[in-house]
Image (cartoon, rainbow, N blue to C red; front, side, top):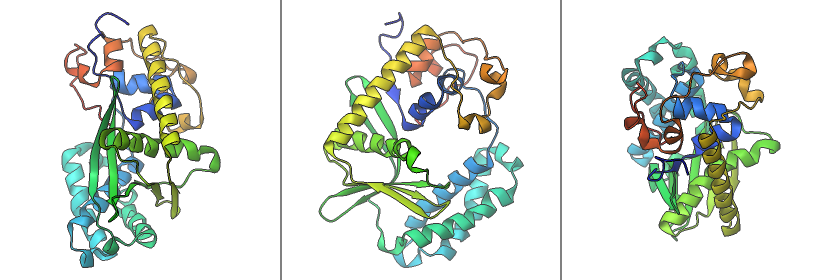
Length: 287
């Protein structure tokens, strides 16, 4: 263990796990260097739709209609722009305008008048012997018998069978956190893809979640190894096409910035941004 990392508050979220599995350098540039990324219409559209799908459940069941949902879009978009002024530069037709169509597809897949979520935007975490796994669940449904269903919304298209396992890893991550923290094994994990009106689901077993825990532990061991060595190599793949860090990536002829002071600690402890002098503001690493 590198000196100074003994009291790390080790923590991992599904998004950061996905970053490392996709490309260790991507993980470094987001977690260690904390480089800014330009606003993305796709990401903003996704955040907007998620916000509306959360807010629609504030209304009485009989008022949860498509018309009511689309009526929420302008105010939610204004709220997002107020919080992140850089979003104002995005074309409204690519963000707020496109949200209406995605919401219409959701109403074709689910009937919110018949749903009463137990939790929305639920923060979950569990301690795996010193490694905290955490994240936000879009929706948690609870049946009268106590059975739990974890639901996550996606505004893109469903993955091919080749990549289904990677998509479901995020939900298994949440299911493991719920199981370890509450002692309840979720009965169903469900991904709702609005891009092509597809619902992908599995009913997880204890064996599957134990396998997920082993995978997370192995992944964290790999992150620790790379963080200590400082060898954050890029991994080329199809996601490189839309990566915003190409100018910092050797695989694309770019040069990464010098590793900041305390880089190992920054890579392993989300709290460390406020304790390491990097010349940057601390930012939340929960997601």
